Length: 230
Image 1 (cartoon, rainbow, N blue to C red):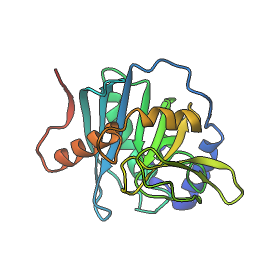
Image 2 (cartoon, helix red, strand yellow; image 1 turned 90 degrees about the horizontal axis):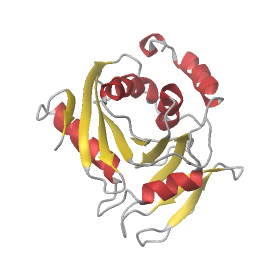
Image 3 (cartoon, rainbow, N blue to C red; image 1 turned 60 degrees about the horizontal axis):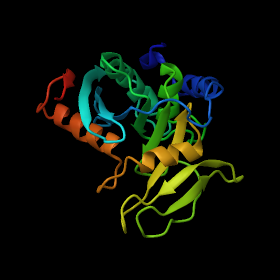
Image 4 (cartoon, rainbow, N blue to C red; image 1 turned 135 degrees about the vertical axis):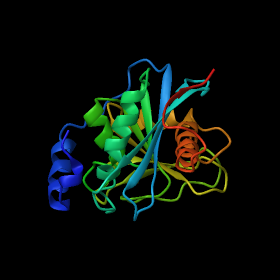
């Protein structure tokens, strides 16, 4: 893989366009025994990134363990290009996993991105892994607000009407989440699978647990490396 620390933003734009041509969106037909969530923690002015992937059984969503990595990055903090700060550390965390999940849910966007290359798509293409993006905020696209009840959905599209994903109300009267396919899965299956990951919180369990793990890791409460759970 290229050293992203050496890239300029124009070079990163070209790389996004090259990678986008490799994104495959199709119904997910593989097994689904394990799912994982990936998240990153960092200060936008810091060069240190804390990356975590939590592995869970599916559909029980019982955690199996987590892989945590700390990495120095020097690519600038630029909206739309955060994958260049985050993907290298996530790939290191991925390599530490003793068992790879069937689906990886990434805290961020898949194709719901100006160049259709959010972090879930970027990671998915490089790792050749089925990925789904689950984001807390919209980066790109237009949508109508879904109903206030848990489970309400509306489409997220570009301005030409091309469907990029779904806006899902994961908890009644709480801000929705933005679900888009990353790689090797399509829009309907991204939503179908993610819905099965929603419990009582706004965030789906895979990314919620990954978020908690990386923040504990950043604070020094849990160690770097792979930690299995009984």
